[in-house]
Image (cartoon, one colour):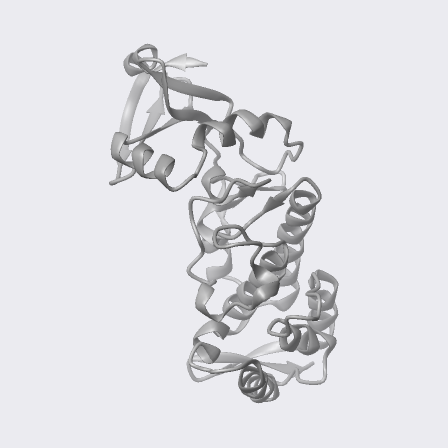
Length: 273
């Protein structure tokens, strides 16, 4: 553990918002220091920030950027130290990609990390392309520790891709904790967004029931040209509370072997090669 006063002299630059400061340190690491007001709100809301950092030591997943130290100010928890990771973000990578094989490879790499996380009690309710980095050795790193839900400790962030008002019971453990089913949903949402520019949640968010959602999704998949694929069944099952979701990496590779993307107005569609 470190006392905040001992890192102040090694700060090279600072970035801040209403909830925390990010301090870039001379040794290349980052100190994330929460504001006093955020710490008070977090305690009131049961976020258990200090416990999250302390118990992260038991996580054995090299692809996650985890705290390397904990920071105290006048004896009270205020933040943590974490490595600074360099490389291209998934957001940058997908801007230049239209090949379904390359997209499938990126998604499958992410899926493998998520599977490891699920096995160790981690859920990823904020899968964010800006915080997934492809390293020079072609491995990936999920860089934002605050995005993970660990054991009974909720994530500090929720992805814009996942609007809880459209989620069924299989996605929620209680009012604040998600089930691993949310990760499989997020993977499919990301794929449709990256490959076709489709925000599936926007398509169905005004639907009053699951039957209407499935009708809208069926029409969409038919229009995209993949309604007969196993992947299409996976998408339809997302909004069935009594049907388990599946990881789709292998399905996406099969699609890449069979289809190519073609421009169609503001979105893209699948066409058989």
